[in-house]
Length: 137
Image (cartoon, rainbow, N blue to C red; front, side, top):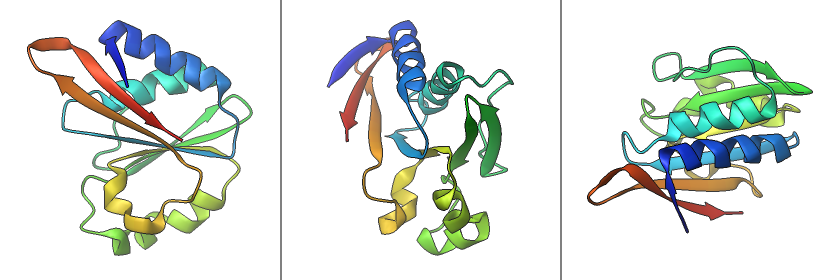
């Protein structure tokens, strides 16, 4: 586990983005307001995305160009369950030679591919500008 200020979290995310190579799936879990989209934005900057990266909460999927491949940013918060993945083009996205960033991955059930990098952010009690980051994979 890492304990990072929000500035350190962004720097960490940019460094991660610089080191990622497609195809790669990265999941981002954590409570509302934990910083998932902020971390996605930092990863995208490091990967080479220059356009604004916004939360796809209502669109569910955003596609960006970055580095040598596309970046798919999925926000699964509004899905009822894994059956809703079919409407997103889940299988096509997962088969793409792309960097795939998935917020609220628990909504995908067991549809996530093996080998995904799992990041989980958590608030730190009494510290509004600090997050705990758990990294698995």
